[in-house]
Image (tube, rainbow, N blue to C red):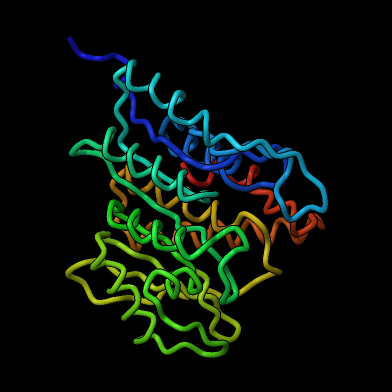
Length: 278
């Protein structure tokens, strides 16, 4: 008998929940939902607000994740998308890898946002062992969305300040593809007054998609970007078109946030723009 739970497209989103400060699952749920996909969160931890604020509540959910996931197995759930974001330990990375093994079907698209670092350095929580574990997780991805720092970590490339030749970034993207993903986008590459994303798909020449840089760096924009990429992947949107859409949406959200005087740690006020993603 057909499992009626699976009569609608669903995406499992494995990330933390921050009650305030737009990032992680708090960002993914409205974006993925408005794009016509049921968003099913797997919380890795609970924050009152994210860690860019001076004080926050935090509850690690690692020990609860296996029991949580086991109930989904009993329900016989299937997912058209599995999307992971920031993971706080090697154990969590291993749980995600097992989740993909258990729930992946022929129609599942796996999107991994390897949230590991920025500005040339890994985050303080990321050990060498965790970096190695993330490389193993990349083997399971259909799509990977690293920034320049994360692409360097994944490929053991020395990060250097200043201009990066496109050929060098493309070489890193192709090395990441050799790990497993068919599609890679290296995000947030600064090129003077522009910000660029390098799109790499197997069988196609790498492409650089640029737009004028606006506003200031803001928390959660990578989550906004990757959530759109993930939903589009499930909906069958061509990858380069999806990258353009995600980049344009982030830009509009930054501009609106600047107009409203929203603090940078509050992220981007994208809610009024959600209808444009349908």
